[in-house]
Length: 266
Image (cartoon, rainbow, N blue to C red; front, top):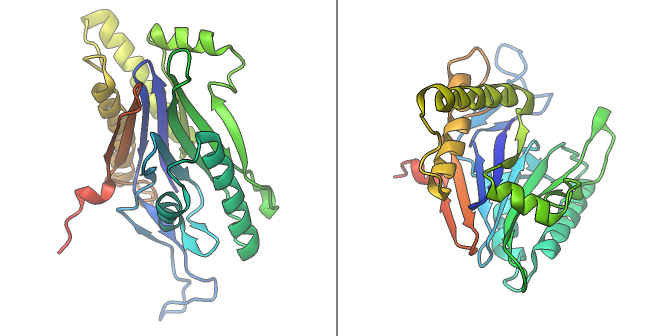
């Protein structure tokens, strides 16, 4: 499974993901006892990628493979070798959609999932626009449904861009969350309620100071807490540390912290 969180604020875009990924054996594989081989989980999977030469991040949720290739490896190859420096944001989203549909259709492996694609649009005239698109499908009951590009934030909100930017300027955040969405939403809402209470009764402001770094740390805290709770639960480690995150500020400057940088390699 997966947990990815993407946020827009008046500072730009923050994208965060856990690093656990499930691998399943063939249904015919058996252990020496004759029992079916259970799924295994590996960590250190970068579910958030920074696109080279672009102020763009791409994260994924759901499907462990695209075709017959692990999704993290497939996406790493896509951003490094397919995306060109001259490609535009909308073109990158359309191209990603087409390639995922092609590879999944060709292999017959129709996993359910999607991608968050984040950037800060910089029009020739007017202010910068933090944006998150969502490329996903909905394969109910095994029926193949193609991936499609959804312009969730801001163009899918049903409000004008000016209204959207005014909301951000007032301190309103918007975000997408996918993977263990329902369970994480309950935890996240509890966190928001707690920090609102701390601000109201004790004057304790979280995140503070109000800047991009604090927003990234707070998003990592939310995802990390969910990972830690999973590690202490009776559930398999389908969501886990370490965490990958990136930021894109209003000038298009990016930072990137890979889950792999938290691992030690000989």
